[in-house]
Length: 427
Image (tube, rainbow, N blue to C red; front, side, top):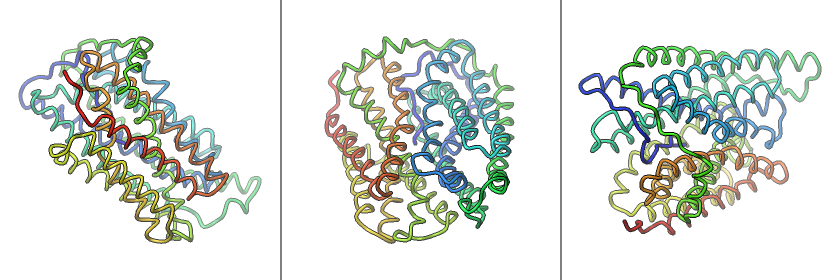
């Protein structure tokens, strides 16, 4: 998922001039790398915990539900906290909260109880939400206005790079350590010991991540006075709901909901999908490694997308990419073997420009109320909780292939929005 960027940052702090600005910019870009990778590591946890706790697909998708629900619950309190303590201190709190959540994986692994992992994931999602609310205005203010878009593109590239490398890391460390024992054959104390033992590899990975997050938080704390503190503008969420009377924004909010849901849903089932005998029949580690190319495609697409958007109207290009994504999922649904596998992986490339393009088209014409529209769009990221859960429930009731019909519908909705918004709003 691309990181949301406020269309018009509210009271963004003024950056210092000189070489120190580049140091601050590097720090902010590093944060994009980290929270992008950590967010999508959930795609590796889904198959790992599904097998470990003998979950069905609906239960396994609670991993994404717990994580992405935090966007809906934490976004408004996070905005108020940023307004109260300032951007840099809020970033430190965000990293600290994420580190604390990662450390909670240790007692979760020790107990071997699935719900404890969900609690840690919700807190981790809350920390990332706070971090995004604080870091987005900074990336736009660290340099001249005319180069703002290049800085955003640069940050998005490192966000995608973090996802690709973290999935590679997760596939090797978390899925690569999967035991050959089938937990369904165990019971009682033997099953409890097995779950604790297998969960240890997860907790060890997240403890390592927690150490890195603490070190980054310390660096940001030491730089907390580098930028003058300005209070962020408070936005009344209830008042902002009135903006949904504007069809373009309302349609855009719906599209962010279904896009994040489709992107996360496809990624969440890919490992289990590739393991199926009528697809590739590979082991979990190999499937996880192949999943990383889903996100590599998104990274490559974002690099090329900036050029394509100069040649084609954003709405039309969004329609083309969304129709392509729907077609690729449909091909996977209707086929078997390598065609089914690689057409689903290729959806990552088609996803590449969707989030930022939907975002920018939806807030177009809002003027001074663009931050309010941005807030509504960010809240719609909760689609990453709802749509994957729907996919899981359908997979349980029918099959994993049948569940692919859900993202097809999602992408067709996005294609419709692209066509609807193909013409710019007159000033």
